[in-house]
Image (tube, rainbow, N blue to C red; front, side, top):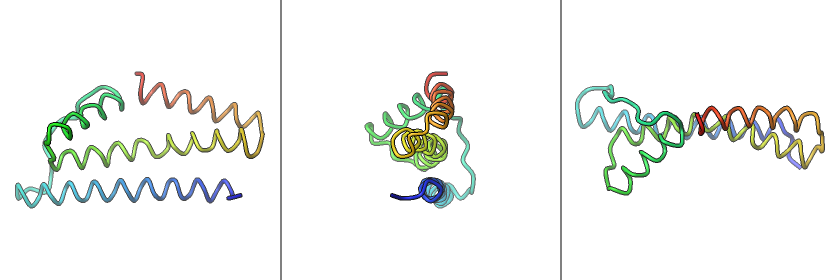
Length: 119
């Protein structure tokens, strides 16, 4: 069985690397197209779920733009700690069978779920 600290480290590392790849790709693409290194747009949606729905609609409509890559990078960055807490909750519940840590991480997971998706 993999140690919890190693598992969390991999989750955080992969999340940040993927985020950076999408952000850099989107910014470089925008720079190549516009000649300006920045993006000028506002984020749509009031929570992460609406943010994703907006991006999915753009993809389905075939509007692949630099802003979409940046949005994916932002969404990945926001989801990284969420996945980390989810995995921690599952780990404490089933691998460690530690009720106290399961409760605490479950509470943090519930708060993150509310703030990212329901608020």
